Image (cartoon, rainbow, N blue to C red; front, side, top):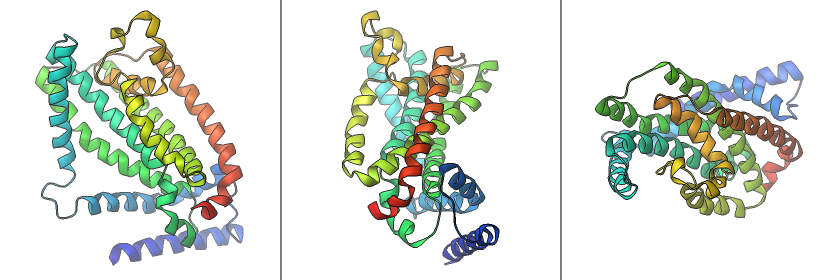
Length: 286
């Protein structure tokens, strides 16, 4: 009851401040709605945290079950794939663990993003909230879950004696760049998914294929030169590369940085256009 009352108070305060400033709600572009959503940060942060608490309500160790499951999965897969690829278990373990954690964040944001407005249809129809609030709520929720998954990474790095160097600092801008890309992808998929209900199903069906074509449990150098285009045409591979490389102590390739930056700029530009055309129709579609 206290949580509901807090939500209502925050929404009411936002409505009053908006009305006082503009006379009525007149956000018409994605940039306008993002600004308004930033002013509601406390709301979507609280909602995202509430979602996680509800998911693991009455659980003994809560979301740390994710950490345990990730650790077991990484251990088994590394044991098998290191033998299949004739790789050292010690060197292959951190590579696979980091790749799996990043892949989990990417795949979940994409699959959940395609349904984000559909699942929040009641709130969209009843509350005058900017649409990015629902996407930011999803992003925050998945980021917290990813942090629980990532708890296995320091344990593994300590176990194998992986040193920390200057390149490790690059994980901060790399993670921010990844989240920036995932945000526009979730927003765009959410809009298209609200209009065409086949889109969430297609995205969910395609993720296993993308997983196989992405170097999560295999290294790019394992591909022959005539099939390297599989990685070159796969943006998810670059998303993983820019974050995984600094964690493992090396600098990401310049091409990976440029690819992620170009995708972010082009993706946000496309999302701004689509959002401007479809913003007022989403409530009808859901």
